Amino acid sequence: MRVAAAQARCPWLDSAAGVAKVVDFLQRAAADNVELVAFPETFLSGYPFWVEQTGGARFNDPDQKRAYAAYVDAAVELDGPELRTIVEAAGDLKVFTYLGITERVRGTVYCSLVAISSDGAIVGVHRKLMPTHEERLVWGIGDGHGLRTHQVGDLTVGGLICWENWMPLARHSLYAQGENLHVSVWPGSSRLTGDITRFIALEGRVYSLAAGALFSYADIPTDFPFYDQLAERKSRYDGGSAIAGPDGQWIAPPVSDEERLVTADIDPAAVRAERQNFDPTGHYARADVLHLQVDRRRLTTAEFLD
Image (cartoon, rainbow, N blue to C red; front, side, top):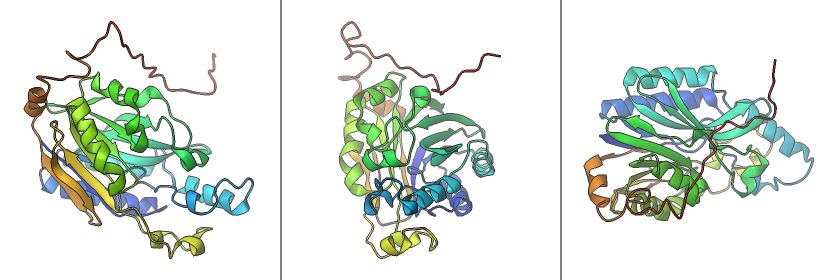
């Protein structure tokens, strides 16, 4: 099977342009016989880049409030027209798609990873378990509902978002479901993906695919509250998309500063071969000593009994 990371420039806070870009990369993937493609963290409609650069923790700061409101307005809903267009395109082109989104639920935004089948249906929505550092000023905390794998041809595929890929039990929950392709999505930085992509491959004896975006502060809309402070800054978000094999060796080393599909042809038989001497949730596990319990209920703040 051919798989790919879509390393693309993020149309920040512009959901319409973001949808068009996703569809364009799906068409490129289909033309290259790619059967699974992953887009970066919150590719639609953007990562909250401004928070760490502008004193985002200032309480009741009017500009921070306006920035947050703009971010919520640009986010997308699961049943909205943006995802509907992308789901239809994925189904028409027969490409299984992992898409990072800012998911709006009333006044809260979640960092979510949506799994879209090649039949054109949303089959999973994973909300980031724990936003990292300043992200907690913007995103809600997720739950275990989306800790699920999906069957794509002969592959069992799972995905995690950014630093939750460093959470051993989150990874274990996917390995235990038979995962043999692990997808990690990132805001876009080769310094983030260089170590963890190969580590996951070796630990899980899985193919490991990382998808990161490109971003320039010059892409910030001119009416955004902190545009003047940010527009001239140099961005550290250079992509870093990469693919490692189940032996931990690079198939596609991290790619920087280039907008393109990062592709690889992978074979599940290579996973089985590497598990001859190590399978972390199979013959090398000790279920009598170590056991993980995962709560996959979608957490809600109210239960109504009518």
